[in-house]
Length: 133
Image 1 (cartoon, helix red, strand yellow):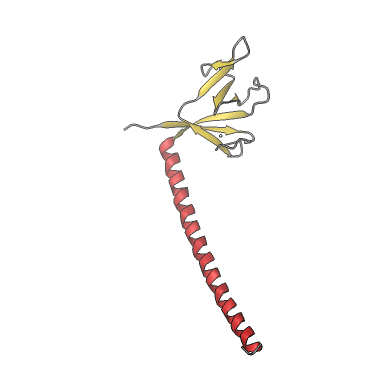
Image 2 (image 1 turned 30 degrees about the vertical axis):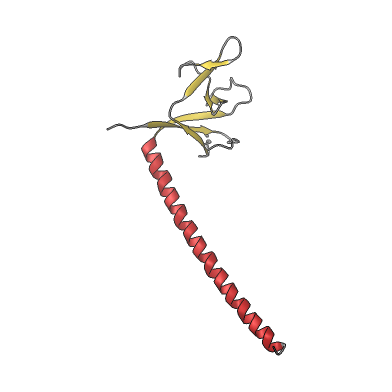
């Protein structure tokens, strides 16, 4: 059986528009592989092994690894290996639940609209009786 591993990336304060979970369970993103980085002697970021890395590159942005602050102005992130199958199952369950909630909200909105339409008709009828029409 083939299993796929993904990495959840967690940051302390998520300011990104994309979906990379902070220390308070705010997920910032997923990736199939982690691109570890370090600074070259010239000051640019280059790929590194996990042991020599000071951070990661994710969605073209550098992030400090938790406990390291060598990339000035970058957020610190945790890298957690996770089972992609479980994540997909949870996303499907959440999507199904949200679809049911949306369907219920639609039904409630339609019922409310119908009640308001009936009230409008009753008010028009009363108004017409009052003005003798």
